Image (tube, rainbow, N blue to C red):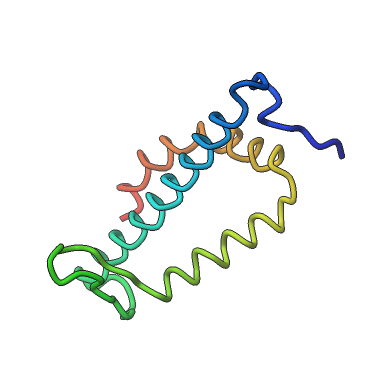
Length: 114
């Protein structure tokens, strides 16, 4: 399998700025996924539709800043499983591209399942 350099499309003078911005975007995106997951689990826990998990409030001054160790471990294991399972970013991109059109359909049909 041939390795494709995603940053090869950037010219040499702007390679490092593009690389730094892409890395920061990946960090922000991963933090958004973690925060959203923690928030959803906290809300489901409050509604009584999720098993009891340990919720750690990380700030005494900022309400809603939480950490759930079990969910963090599950996210790590799922990330590793996807990375090891696909083994190639092109295949992950293709899987995302194939499933993306069905996401609105699943959201539209989800109220019918309740």
